[in-house]
Length: 108
Image 1 (spheres, rainbow, N blue to C red):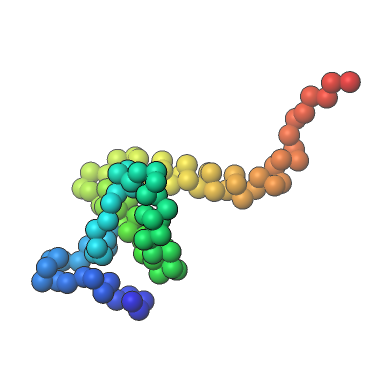
Image 2 (image 1 turned 180 degrees about the vertical axis):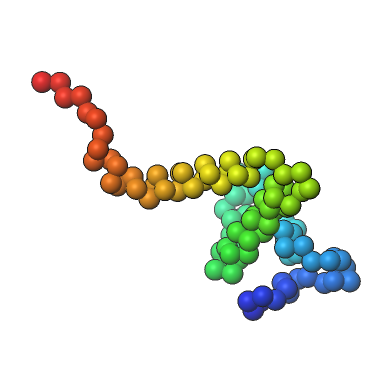
């Protein structure tokens, strides 16, 4: 699949209008229904290439956007989610600098 093209599995006559939040490949067992013994085989069937991972991230972003940003009446949830995610991201980014400023109690 080249950049900006539809997935090879997408057929407009079968699937209708293209939805970027939908996976058009062959359906597989959901992670919640996988037994512990079948987990390694299930992970082996995943597409772990760069295109597969970016496609999964893209579908997750579009699902989030369809659920939280594109409804007619948008609440405060997406803005709180972005704020909390950015707080966690920047905390993790600056953790190395902040850990040296901890207040320690030294018991002599």
